[in-house]
Image (cartoon, rainbow, N blue to C red):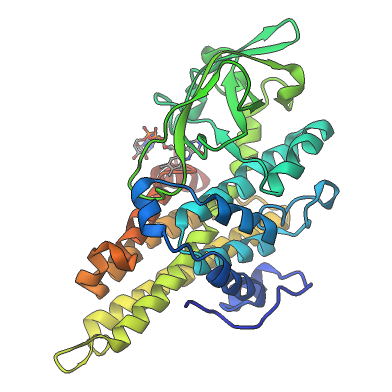
Length: 399
Ligand SMILES: Cc1cc2nc3c(=O)[nH]c(=O)nc-3n(C[C@H](O)[C@H](O)[C@H](O)COP(=O)(O)OP(=O)(O)OC[C@H]3O[C@@H](n4cnc5c(N)ncnc54)[C@H](O)[C@@H]3O)c2cc1C
């Protein structure tokens, strides 16, 4: 049982970034953590982790609770909540629900895929897609990466060509979260690779469009319960109504959509870091060696202090980025710092949790080793740590 409170409600007030930062047990976060601790506790997680299988029932429960609709405009069925509320909900989710693959899938749709439709889509696209996405009925995915264009994403080889009444897409996207499950894809394609970022346009493509095929699930190190695959477009015809934004605006849509969201996606992982710390502290208090609790050994207690430092500093940077974004100020540097810190701190703390638990950390049944595998992807997706450091260096005036 992981609990941050017991009987707190989500309340009706709008928390500020400072409120969220100063109150580790903020009532909004605590209420979601407690809800997830009771409602999102899969009893077959080890098995699904081994078999790479997604928890559809958990997804629906989370959607019913409002995790996907929370930040969406009430005109399309959402709650219209702000970024800080969204981060508190996702932190609470990460604290209470141990299925990081489910949490990651929810975070990708809520922070990356849906906002592109809401911010850049036409009224018709919003009305057609948002209600069924936020209700959990349909799944969405976001595709930019390709086998040969990863960090250098605008060198993509997936092309679009104008046809009589729309466009024809050709190419293959890689490493797409939720692809095997998705009903609709946000797709970035280029008119001509030689045009670089100027040639990129964004499209919405239904999964049942002729010419679109999805590969089998690609098993991975962690987040194994999130389906993951490649998406192929073979003379895939779509109408003009499926284009998001003007032709050539894909790079700016991508950059704007990812400015701070690349860090916000990690809120669930920061919640998981807190649960990991609480578990490690509880273990250090009760595991006795040499006639006393292992937490009495400074080598162990300092490891836990370092985990606390990493967790709090990750939150500090995350809510700084959120505060800036909510004030409409540039948040790219703060978000890059938050992403580096949260993703790298999660790995370091997962190693410390493993060490603290000894062999219990290494065997599968306690979930400690799974945390380490689950957090490893955070330094890659949404732009690698190296790419985030490039952003920070650029902001410092370096090349
Ligand atoms: C769990 C997970 C989920 C993902 N989900 C999606 C998704 O839903 N949709 C999607 O489109 N993609 C997704 N991706 C793909 C992800 O965005 C890419 O893996 C990422 O952008 C890096 O690209 P790459 O893997 O090709 O690595 P590369 O770009 O080939 O990088 C390899 C190495 O070189 C370094 N490097 C590259 N360029 C530079 C540079 N200029 N300066 C310094 N170092 C550099 C990198 O940091 C890295 O260490 C996902 C990846 C993972 C792991």
